[in-house]
Image (cartoon, rainbow, N blue to C red; front, side):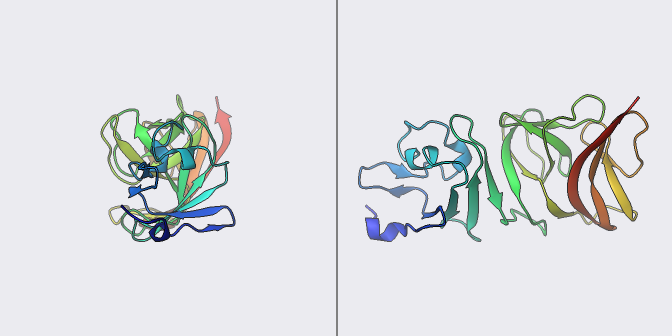
Length: 205
């Protein structure tokens, strides 16, 4: 059994440093599956500390390399957490969320996250909610990682200088839409990089 001294707890500026899957003195498991997004039941052993924390609490996950900084943004069942500055792959950086894929998702596609589920965004049919770009493909009902700000790089892109807009079925375009909602995805800062800056501009009729 891991001693309380080995937990490395640190309470500073509402941050908690924890080591997931650590056995606590009451024999519960801290962090449970190691994913704060999974902490949706305050009665589940090992999750109560995370579940009962107020919005804005930061959790530094000592188990990950590099260390992940989770921020709790809402509370209660279905609580939403984001990870700061913890690139999961490639050269992308910034803040991303994890959500359950509501349909099979491709990589580098624009999605809407609502109630913990991610679906393709669409300028005509699905354009209200938290926007993000998938960091990889995800099968339906599996976890998708979604970047919501900063820069995404994809070597296969061949972008022109200028703005990037939402198209249909999660795809983006550099041609401003003439129908539907005009959603700014961001700006092409090189042929292979987009700086995400989601903005709902106006609707075209």
